[in-house]
Length: 223
Figure (tube, rainbow, N blue to C red):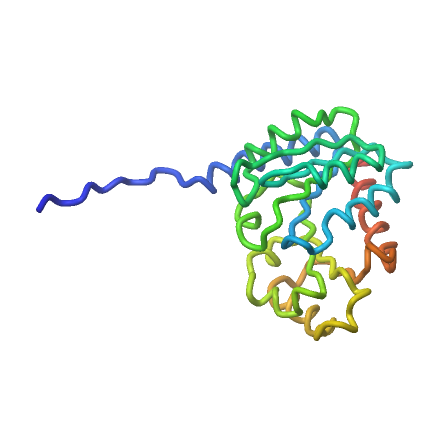
């Protein structure tokens, strides 16, 4: 029996992706744009929170939104109602956004006059965390219906988070969810991430996250 052919991988995909991500980060910094990558599971409230934040920020900042989905334009249509620039990106079955896809979406959106770009990544707690999009920061959502143990089960997602928003607090009485445990579990994976507890649908406690983003956007604009 013939021996199997051995193929050496000279450079892995994530290494190339990360190098490209550094270039995008540098370009966003040069253009004074805050690029926010929003990641979470399907149904966690990403679009609702993004819509809420955009409506709060759009009078003071020029904003663009990239909606990434395997298919459909449902979320993009919702965001169009805010009046900001929105494009829909289809991933053709991919469960994540690579840096190349991120770059192509930024080009399609047109960022020259923007202060803030928000990428709503594909709904998934695994794959999106493995690929740096070149974003300035990563915002990860953890919704009450998902359970407070998700940071333990999906470690990388919370390890790469700069900000964690515990969402859908308006349904806390229906589910067995502990905010204390959720925060502690986030801290087990990431001691430095900012954690916010809110309900975007009821517009409860979103102010703190809004103020955090304002400070970060301004720090980039005024650098």
